[in-house]
Length: 441
Ligand SMILES: [Zn+2]
Image (tube, rainbow, N blue to C red; front, side, top):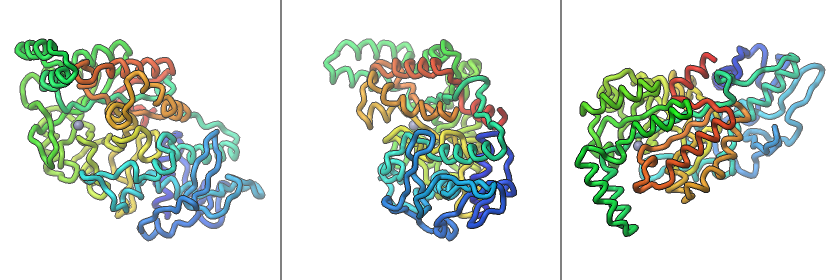
């Protein structure tokens, strides 16, 4: 468990800008340091075996006003006790943190959807009703608190250039040439027969309603916000899934890229279908964008935990932002900061950072069937959790959802979210900028 303990400790240190070592915090059966974390039932983790905790064996305790689960312990006791000057955490917060951060359950799960994705409904987060709670941050909060008690020092939370949390704004660009067709179909279904004529005549003058990059940039400018635009570099379908409806090589995208970067926003790659398990294809996609690219998010959120992290690392990305669920908003790895994914086979972390995806337009509209106006109220609890830890909430709003054709009302929801973030003193920025501040701030 030494490597796994070090991985969790490194992730913890990054959150609180600390530099604690295994000499200062011990983990095992007996204490060897002033602060000790009791090891629980971790045989499965040590032997790299499937481990699916029995729901009835999970122990629930309240910490920081929330009931949180502990996955590896057998005795229901106080969260921490002090014995002769040694502070003992009685629950195995290392194993539980590692279990959630490493995606252990998806690694060993054989249940996948028709695209090979791990399903939200199969996750402990969903089954235990903790999708909206960044449980690992609560475990870290326990350790931080005990450290503060022991050292009589206060450990400050992240400082986002003076802001109280960070909202990482992103846009996946799947479609920007076919708004006139899709908008027309939608209008005809609603018996609005004049709309197709308007959309077709605009298209004749090369103005597709979803080619709306200026509009998005102008909205964000009003909030002093920057964002990341993930572009697809492949327009042929693959794995029975459509890719882009545009060709990234057309010269007009050079103008678009210049506009986006001159606003201080970022261009990233939206890895096309199949690239998540194919390094050559991913590199080919990356090279089609003639800019230096830091990050990626896979189209359809395709992700195979046994192959994808290695592909991302080998392709030289600094970050990925694919780990979220389409079916539900919340925390797939129960953590509200960027983190290095863990290589379960080699027992060490990967080099890139995952900036977990928390909230997507399609989740609210397509999967949860919420109306644009009801959505904000529903997502407030997730924001409250992120604000509690001064964490990061990554938001995906497709460019098509800024248009009133097919997706009426969703632009206002996005604007409403940005207003809420501003009201609560959030930093609104791109993936790369947020990762920079996180690692250096
Ligand atoms: Zn996509």
